[in-house]
Length: 263
Ligand SMILES: [Zn+2]
Image (cartoon, rainbow, N blue to C red; front, side, top):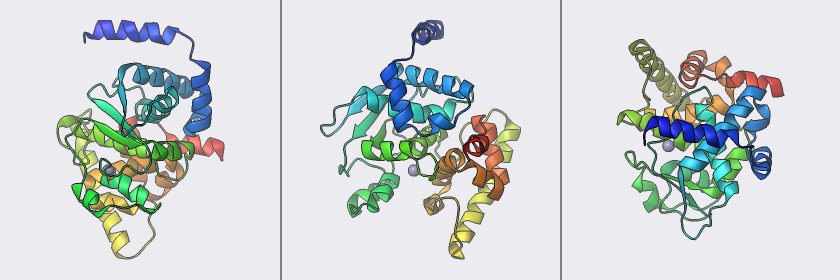
């Protein structure tokens, strides 16, 4: 689509008042909303409207997609673009939503979430994640659980949408596209060093702030670091200041301050 057309359509959309039932969804299902400073709440509402209008949501395995579901997914995805990025996941194709207990289509990460609930399917685990697939598959109960608790470091939408950003340069390896060469060099240096530290901590049996699942590879490490950044920003800034700094410079937001405000 021509960008002038798209931007005039977005302007028109944002000129309308934000739907009252959607605001209720943000308040009930998206724990981050209450933590954000006023201007970022506004930005979250705007980005949510654009994402709901422009992205395609598909109910799978009999799930009927409702506005509540779209808004809950979109607002969590919006966290990743709050810092003023003009990218509304335009290169993502469909967002598939699954009801509980549909296993075959979920990623390894989602299986890990499910395993705590007692349904793991060994064959499906071995399918691994579809790195180059532009579709995103989410289980609605996990979307909701992740959205309602903004402090536990576990957020499925942040995780899967971070993978999408990581893959924008055609390679999903824990290095999302960077604005400058210097930033890229810095990113690579810090991610390598922090990933090694994570492996060493796990090997030594030390408790880690970052989810142990990040040890899978650097792509998973980036996705779990993103979850931690948005949900446990203060702890991340304290325990992994360099990792926090590259994520802050990438997402252009300061979640450690949001959590400090609420403490
Ligand atoms: Zn993952």
